[in-house]
Image (cartoon, rainbow over all chains, first blue to last red):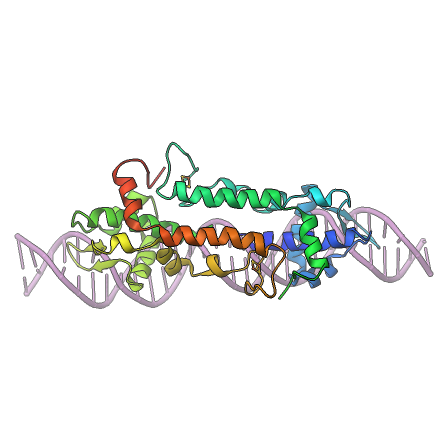
Length: 144
Length: 144
DNA sequence: TGTTATTCGGATAATTTTATCCTATTTTAA
DNA sequence: TTAAAATAGGATAAAATTATCCGAATAACA
Ligand code: FES
Ligand code: FES
């Protein structure tokens, strides 16, 4: 459904949120360890999120990644997915036609569209805060 | 969402259905042309569907691919997706945890599960016949 | 019987995604 | 001023997916 890059991006963002609530920056190393991802690859993804202004990075000793505490509850999953995987998952045709087009639909268009729209709504309505709280309260986990 | 291989597999199956209703076998070449897919790659996918007993192949002159006319309405999209992409899309964790597990859920589990289940239901309830009919009646298309 | 049309299957290549490595840059603090 | 701790970013490699090529097997038919 999502790319590995996107999965890492989401998990990393959740972990960063968790720490940003406590004014703590987290290092790449700590993130990769926590979400069980390859370090260098994770670095690329974080850079991408920084460029998209979703997270913030601070270089040098005592640096790391953080998210504006006041922004956490307004950052939606859709922003992260968009930044990393683009909008294909929302707009693409289920059977790979060049574009999904009501006026030139593929055979699964109607059925596919409703699923895709539900996914879209889910991603647009879910914010980082609620996800982070589930980790904090111990009812959800970032790794197996 | 689906792999290219899966997209081709679905489109090919629809086109074969369409012809099987009229007792016509279709060649690899005709299929690839109709669904706008690379021929040799499509061949691999068709072989896969044959091995999974979803479609039937006949070698030699006047050979080609066909689907048992009486089976078309009972072949579900889910069978094709399963044959080609496996069941990850139904059962996998949205954030890539090793398994999706109610008792050890990732932060998006609940929200993701409902989308995934809707997708699953859609694929399990959609059969080849209805898709083929949409092509036949001209309200849907297999290529751009 | 031989030729032609076809699928099958193995080997290989191209592309994309995922992952690693190394150096440069920035910042803190001793 | 120097050392240490960190991110940035370019180059490269590994793995997975997508795509191509070619000979073998099979079946129809002249
Ligand atoms: S045209 Fe295929 S999903 Fe809309
Ligand atoms: S555990 Fe992640 S979707 Fe169920």
